[in-house]
Length: 208
Image (cartoon, rainbow, N blue to C red; front, top):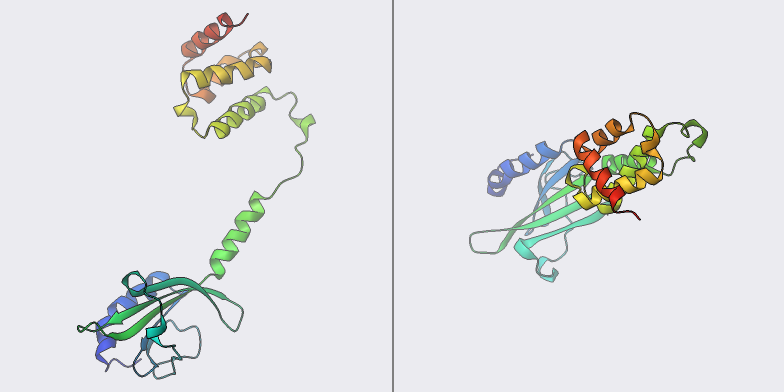
């Protein structure tokens, strides 16, 4: 990379910073829009180097973009890797296009991570109920967890009415017929036992 061009000297710290932050997955290229050649490349992903043809289109044909920044848009390398790319038009003090800065991010690690997470989140085999039919604590977690997911609020933000609704479901499921269940339920709902007893009393008074 030559640093004789004033544009390389001017923009080199920015390009080096972006390349260092996203290394080794980002290629940063500075193009000369006047001579249609590459001025400098940081972390090259192809055989391009300073002086290589840029093969850019006419900038005048680009639709205006806020701040002269285009993308992210998709590109594909010859080896099949997909890139997310952005391009920014850099202007001289007179407002004329002087250089084009392109950042090409290799999406391979992101796609691999997404595939891994999707595999973990994929539907699993049916739960063997015979293993859990005697585990009433599992049933408590299931009922409370389902209610929390449905309401979209964490346990600590459940209202009094929410807790009464959950306790009603637990009561119907026969949880409170189990010895020591109140302590477990109070812990799951993050309330004291005295609060739990008061809520249970209120719930049962409200029933016919």
